[in-house]
Length: 492
Picture 1 (tube, rainbow, N blue to C red):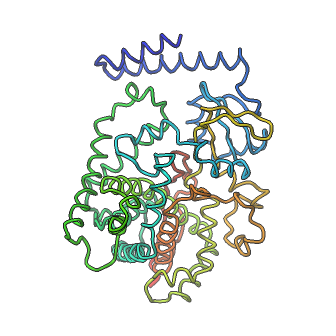
Picture 2 (cartoon, helix red, strand yellow):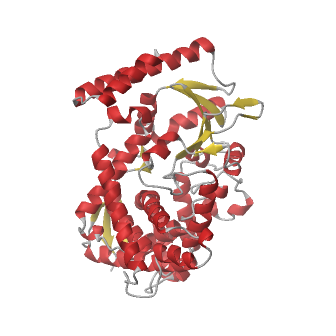
Picture 3 (cartoon, rainbow, N blue to C red):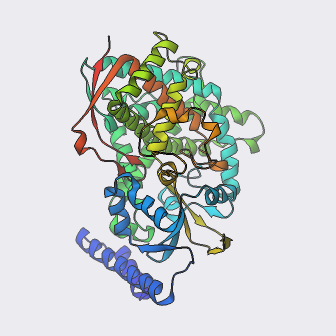
C-alpha cells in the first residue's frame, strides 16, 4: 500500500493538476498513510511502553482551535502523567510537561534535533539558529548571543520609546484597538529598526506591501508546520508567494548590510543595531565571526522568531490588564513613581519590580510559544521506557505553566505570586524562552520591548475594558494568539 501512496504522490508532482485534483490525490495519499500506520499500531502493538493514546492530524488541528486553555493537553497529563505518548499517523510523540525529562532534551543537543517540517519550511533561506542543529548551531549561537549586547538593548529601547510616542500620539482620547493588529505592527516596526535600522512605519499605515509580504510568509510557514512535508507539493498552492516573501526580506536585509559595509550609515547616531554588532565581530578572528551571508540569514530568523512572539505577549498583557483593573492600578502607580514624566529608559525599566512580576505572570499564563518539539536522533531509555530514533519529543510549555503543583490557582492572573519566587519556583517549571543552551538569545530584548511598551502605555492611557469579551478566544497555532478589541482612555 505504501507503494501505491508513493505513486500517487509522484503522479501529482509530475503532472499539472487543478486544485480539486490535487486535493483529491492529497487526501487519498493521506488516507492511505493513515490506514497503513494505524493498522501497524493496532496489529503490531504500540511502538512504546509509555502510556498514551493515538491521535490524528485532524484532531490535532481541532484541539488547537477549540480546546480553551490547552485543556486537552492538561487532561492527558492528568490521565497518563506529565510524560505521556501520542501515536500520530505512524510515529510516536512524547508529550512532556515534566521538568526532569525536559532537562534531558536541553542538555543533549546531539540527541534531539529540529523536526523535518521545521527544517524544510525554511530550507530556502540558509543557516539560521531556529532551523539548524549540531556544531553549526553551536557556532551560530555563540556568535549571535553577542549581538544582543547591552549596547543593542539600549538602542532597541530607544527605538521602542520612539515608536510608542509616534503611535500613542496618533490615537484619539478614546481609542479602540485590535490588540493583535496594533501590537503586530508595532513589534514589526521595532524589530526592523533594532535589527537593521529600517523604519517601515507600518504602525503609521506605511509599507503595506512589506507588511502583506510578511503576513503571507507567516501564513505559509504555519501551513507548512501543520502539513506533513511530503504533502506540501500537493496540498499547498502558495509556493511562489512563499518564496517571493522570503526573497523580499532577504533583499531588504542584504541592501542594509551592503550600505553598512560601504560605510553608508542607516541611522542618525552612533548607536548600533544587530547588523552593526555582527559586522564588527568580523574585525577579529574570521572563525569567530559570521559571514555576510550568515548575518542576513540570522537577521531574517530573528525577525521571524521575534515579531509574532513579542506582539502576542504584548496583546495578551493588554487584554489581562483590561480585565484586572486592580493590577493595572498598581502598575500605573509604580510607573508614575519610578519613571514619572521621564523617558522609559532601560535604567528606569529595571527598577520597576511590579512590572517585572506582571511580565513573568503573563508569560506563565499565556506562553506564546506554548509547545515546541524535537526529533529523537538516538535510541535511549528514560525511567525504564524505550525511546526510539525518529520519535518526536513535544515539550508542552503551557502544561508546565498551568500545573497546579508548580503554580497554585494556575488559571488566575496573579502577578503577586512572583514575590520571593526564588524560594518556591521549581527549576525547569517556568520556561517561556526555553531552557539550557536552547534558551532564546533574544530573551532580554523581548522582555525589554514588552516592558517598555506597557510602561509607556499605562502611563499615557487607562486600558478601560475588553469589548465583546464573550467572543474572545485564544488560538493555539504556531504561537498562541488572540484577537480582542480593547478600549483605551487617555489619562491627561
